[in-house]
Image 1 (tube, rainbow, N blue to C red):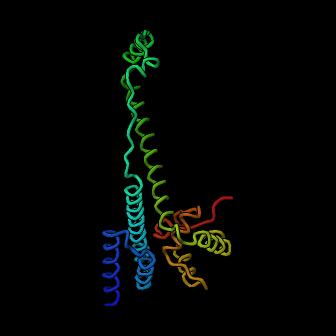
Image 2 (tube, rainbow, N blue to C red; image 1 turned 90 degrees about the horizontal axis):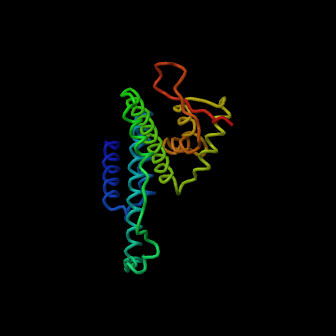
Length: 224
């Protein structure tokens, strides 16, 4: 019953924060998320932690947009106007005549006509792969920026330092689940969300476990 009530309270608080981001208390939301996580199993903790990070990121973005819009409305009361340029003012900068040599253009056109369809197809595939790679890079960069925005007011450096010391003491690599469990029981405990953000922002390496069918992944120190 307590678990259901905490879940309802958290969902309601998140919905209200998204609806009115300027009035949202992000510290209270973080506390509510951690209270909910304490009642869940490890797998459920990771699922809820991921969803909570996404919602908190959205609230941060909405707050930033609101405050920026408010600032612009306050200080940009006089809209900027473009200067009026007359023909006389521009006469010294405008060309009245122009000569155009089309020989190179026509030569390129003839070469393009004689190129085989297979060459065109291959070029198209290469361009598509390059575009997909660029889009994937942009998406990863946006995800990283959103994670940094969520943790802006937190002690990120301390989280990363704690994770690094723990990995050094445990052979430089270990299952993520073991890392979370141990740091939750440390003298200064870290929540699963805190550990996950520390791993993402600290440049640690993520890899699959040694067992093929293992559902857990491993965290290791970056190559130095």
